[in-house]
Image 1 (tube, rainbow, N blue to C red):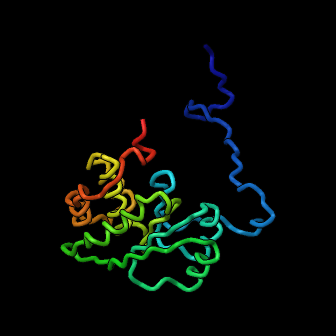
Image 2 (cartoon, rainbow, N blue to C red; image 1 turned 90 degrees about the vertical axis):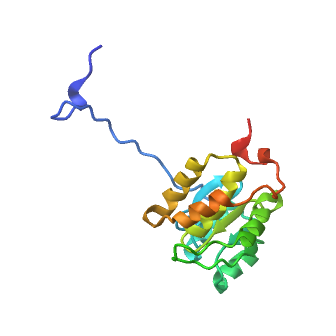
Length: 198
């Protein structure tokens, strides 16, 4: 087999033409002027479950496209008025579990608030749901880590996901919280999560 060297560079490596991919959202006259900007650290956790940092007005078009039913806010601060109005106008329920953001290494996340937030996540009537804290790293990472425990992920995979979002600011105390959190009292069917289906 002979390779065509017309596309090779001076090092003999073959170069390929760049592919052009259209990432423009479908045109809809109602959304024509809306930008689709996801919140900081946005990601899909599972079908109907998303995570991110605190959304603001720049994210409203994107959030509308998710057709959210609920938002779980893990911050104690009052919700900004413009964002609260957006939620009301779009029929999105807000569940706020005020967990203080703390940089101290030995201050733990409150078990009761994570347990209550998990109950909201496990109730599929609340889906699609967005989980967020200020930056989508620590508090959100702890809640998502507990979801992963319910999905029977191994701890190394849970910690890997947590560290991808927390990066250089990963906290051993958060990872210890995820590992020691008691999931036995939470009633749910592990098959209710798409990742667990066979």
